[in-house]
Length: 125
Image 1 (tube, one colour):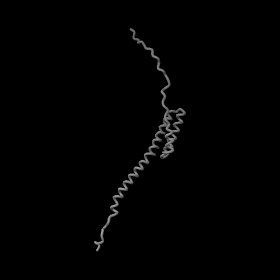
Image 2 (spheres, one colour):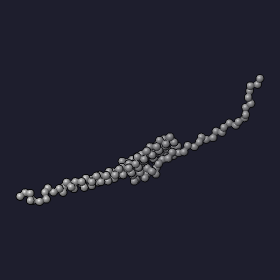
Image 3 (spheres, helix red, strand yellow):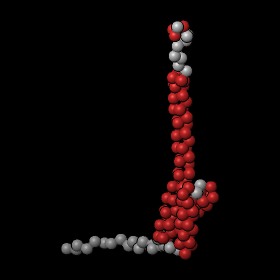
Image 4 (cartoon, helix red, strand yellow):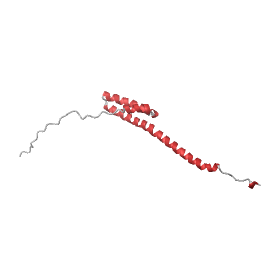
């Protein structure tokens, strides 16, 4: 009894180059913008330093280090942008609510300071 199976001739799979992994972004333009215009607590400058490191690593071919520095640059850019946009808006909102509260307080206290004790001097006689 023949238990052998006929094998179909299949060509071996082609071994080409591995799929290209996209190079990590260095966020350099965003870091320059944050350094020049939104440098909240020097976070824009720190983001610029990491963006330059990411670009250097990407050019030298060290993709993992470039990805690491790119991630740090993105985080510091986001913090600098959020700090430069959110904190002034929050401060403005606090000032507006404080002014509204003080104006209501002043309107309520006008009656206290304009109180007249007695309208005529006839009671003293």
